[in-house]
Length: 541
Image (cartoon, rainbow, N blue to C red; front, side, top):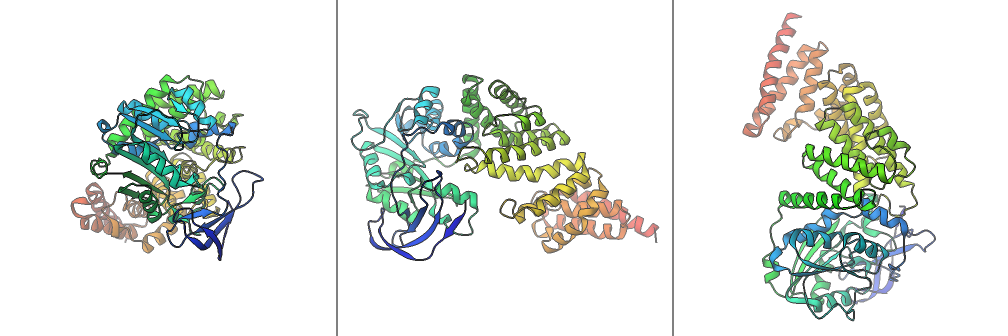
């Protein structure tokens, strides 16, 4: 996504604070939709909001056939959408509404997890298809003050990644406020305008801009301001580099009773939801593909490898039924005529499962290589949103990282060649810090596998890295001393006993210095090998 960063000013009215006058020009780029005019983003110095100079709302009622598979299989960040709901005491909500629900995963989750009576509002064909697939009631219309939703108020309104699509957020938020019960709560998320900087990674910037579809972007101040103007007097905003999450109410109590985040409980509840729904969906459906992939991901990330193996089997059935290829055969995945939008990510997690749980590094390497190829094919697909989800590009980098790590035990020389290939990649595709991390972890695996000749090719680089960033400074962190220890072991195995003794001594001193948090087993091993190295050095004179 080529971006032209701009300097200058134009006369415009800010859609957030209403101030007329000069607005800073920030950037220009191509519209997501081919042949649509370029977009230009402005910023209000008064309130901090960023907005397009053309606030024409796209037609969200238009059908985009490829969006269904993309969103359901990969694009929907279900875990991120439902996370703020898990901070709401379930008993305080009886009736909830999700505005801009799209394929209504969040409403379906709320009904499953909390037993809430749910309703979605969205004009898109994606919402209509999601309503039919999940059985969630959806009003197929744009939300506004005049929309007939019955006379009953809502205890909670969810507005996830919608505010940025709206030209007149004042009207939207005031209409939401009017539909909330006296103790009702608005939960919303929106991109964080603070990332509008030239140094921001391209993929992150692309997600924030979604050029042509995101009309107004907010920083923390602008978001608090527009919520206050809509009548929300109690507001809590959680800020991350990419996202603002807000909880807003007309009285203090809904904010005061928000629960503290409980990541373990949240992920366990999400796994139950995904596992149940994937089994209820038709095995050849895109819905089954989406649920099964996400369940595989959650199980692998939680280290629940028995469940992960089971979920991989289910996903393999879905792929075989729907796409006609065998997930158990990485080579077959590369030859499939139709590439599922979640295939690259699924192949990555299959590789992690084989590498860490099943101890099959050669097979893991085949999965990582296939994941890289699948991402390339997805990038070239007709869907303009492919690879905008953030997860696909992140796991593509992780596939590049883990490929030489897996090859260390099965094909050491190829592992070294893969590292050289990564070094030749553009830093935007594979950042330097990740490259150094990949070198270090591959080096450790080469030494642990006894591939000393291949490890020797990396030894000088590792020694320079260690001297530039001494691991002794972070000895209490898991794995921090491993490269230094393996450099010592390599020196010992290659006959450099004096050098090995000094390196083992450094490991031992650092481990001791970390105290109770230090790696005690590594400390003992380093001391034993230091003595052995000194004995060998003395024997060889």
